[in-house]
Image (cartoon, rainbow, N blue to C red):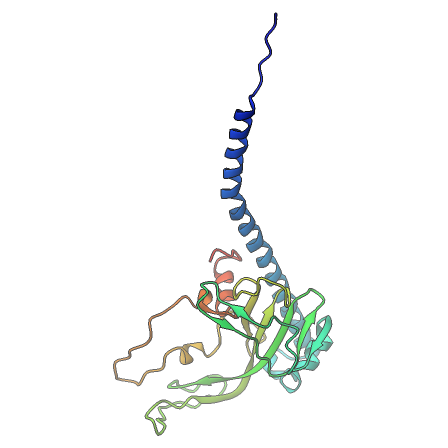
Length: 249
């Protein structure tokens, strides 16, 4: 008689249990990696579309830099004319963005404050572009005619001298109000310089981060990972560029 061999029910259950444990350990990691790759593709694509629109705008106006164009007279007109807008939210309408965002390290929460209108684009990204005045302190005269010298105010602190020519701050959620609503994941803050270049750090960040009097000891706050601590993704765009578009933070 030929005997037939097979797995017992107990052996099958043990095998399935082992497979289940391995899956429980590896699937979340794989899913997180996939989500980060997808989020990186989204912000890279959306920011590149904005950069292309700015380049075309500068060329169309026959200028060599953004500051020489008329964009600062009407940023909203630039957005509606050069980007594919599917929804417009007035300054008192926050529905284009999520109601709240949190930082990667869960230490901070924040909301998007747009000076003017915000928009949802055809690529599903929500965007708000604010005009900001660049500042300079204790520098020699720069290319934009900044005032040099130390000017203490009544509280013996430095006065930040205005360049008089602005740059643009861009707040962008790559999938609108949809989750995860986390700075550095789907929410990013980056900047458009006066030349029309997209960059991750504020043009005046070196002055606003920690200001000290010349010739005196400076007790600046301990440096933190601004990307992981920012609910609106400050510095995360810069980190992505530096790491060759890998979301390894």
